[in-house]
Length: 185
Image (cartoon, rainbow, N blue to C red; front, top):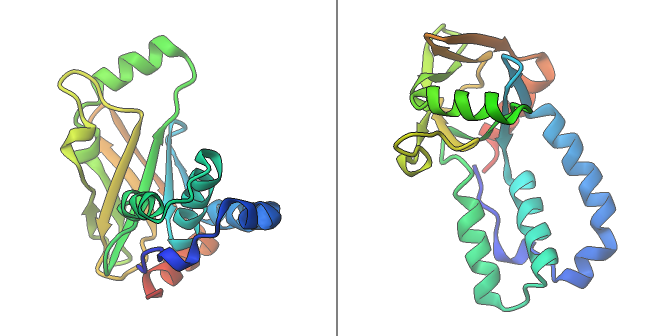
């Protein structure tokens, strides 16, 4: 997937003039790339537009104008994108009740190893992740994952953790959005 380039990032005042229009378009793009699994996991498949928006919002919020600072944001956020044939995902573990959330994040230390995308062939592609996201006694409620689907759009997203085995089929709009992302240069 194509990384966001420096020339695509507007200065804060220029961005401010088109912010609402950009935001509406990105929210629409995110809707087709958001998959809820098991009532508590939200997979947001990132693409160039979603990452560009995050960078642009950070530049706006922090009033970043120095080129080297913008490039730092580009380097940081572009890591969310998959490489050729990969899909990058921001995973949110959304459990509203604090005690329940804390308990599950302690119990689910192995969760990233049990996440998968199901390909049309029936093959399960496992997530790769930065082990620094997993503490020694507690999982972070936000995970950044990559799936090497070799350019093939998945048909489902799932988890086969013994205590939490769930799978969500992707609808046609979701599959088409991910297929388009995989073809983007």
